[in-house]
Image 1 (cartoon, helix red, strand yellow):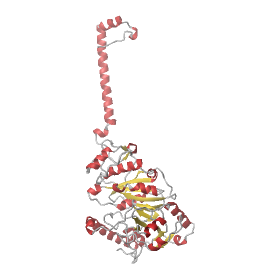
Image 2 (tube, rainbow, N blue to C red):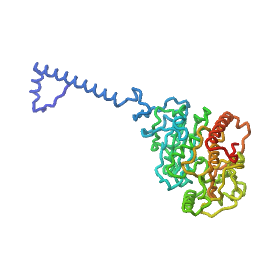
Image 3 (cartoon, rainbow, N blue to C red):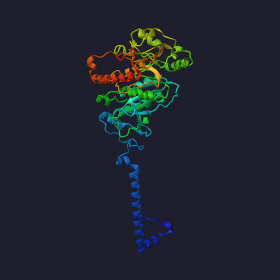
Image 4 (tube, rainbow, N blue to C red):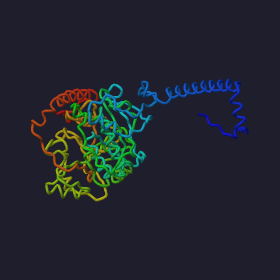
Length: 465
């Protein structure tokens, strides 16, 4: 039923009734209706075509590949995931597109290698100038990410973290990073930069990896879910630890870096005391150190039973009681035992002032020593062909230091302490799972030694084994 306004266009109801009753009006009305139908149909076609081309390309057609700047939809991110619990986690994450993220190759092996890297996946809010601080560069898998909060709280400068994210571990890591940044210490957002990497054969289990977690969607008042089994552990994949070390170090914006492990925590005030020490050397006030080159700066490393010390005085008291030992003393006696350790423990030095305890070389009988050190970003890389499971992953770099005549400056008051708990050697049965990885690392190790000695010459003081 059509209702007309009785005052429309100034016509009375009687006038309207006469017009409606006339034959001419019926023909005209029919033409108007058909014209309106054609117009409406054309509008529907135009709007529908525009929607197909612009509004839903990823839901109806194949989305662009990773090399383009167009982004895929975030509503269904899973693609090729193999781990059920981790896959579900990806669908539950609130993600945002981040098209500016770019892939590159690993620092040492480059394009000929097997790894893909995303530098500054989530950068720190604060940036540092070249000589303003020292970067703590480290690495992690999902199981160890929680240590970063303690580390960032104790280290008062930039922290560079490389995280291994094969397949569905990408989803685990994104969830952990979102919660750490949203709910953790302010130091995490301010100072920690995150970098991701994976093997080309196990890329992230998502249609498009150019996404970042929406931290505003994280509910910090709910209890964090237990970590499911990682993809790496379920597939028994080796951990490419040296790729991680090189990535984290290369991403540093400061001249000096401390390549270390995520479970090792620094003594207090290490950064300002080290920079003051460097200034003293530059000013010619420490000729013993200034006269040797190239050089790196050794940070002695320890284990403690329960409490992490902040000062050398605290560490020495624990050491005297047997509550602290040098790192890996009961697991690998030679790995962290450094020359003069007994004197180092008994010589406290001056609080607030860093000096050189000694200047040594990594030579026999300390040719198996694997010290942790502060250096520039320009020192030789760790060899990316070696895995963590296969052991000896830092030995080739240290052998190169020996062949090239590096001096090792042992710092007198700086130190690192592992997360509480003194490690003890496992039985042979516990390590049988490592045997294939150890065999592979040994083969690579011997090949690398041949390469290094062919390049720099051999030295009987720089022993291989």
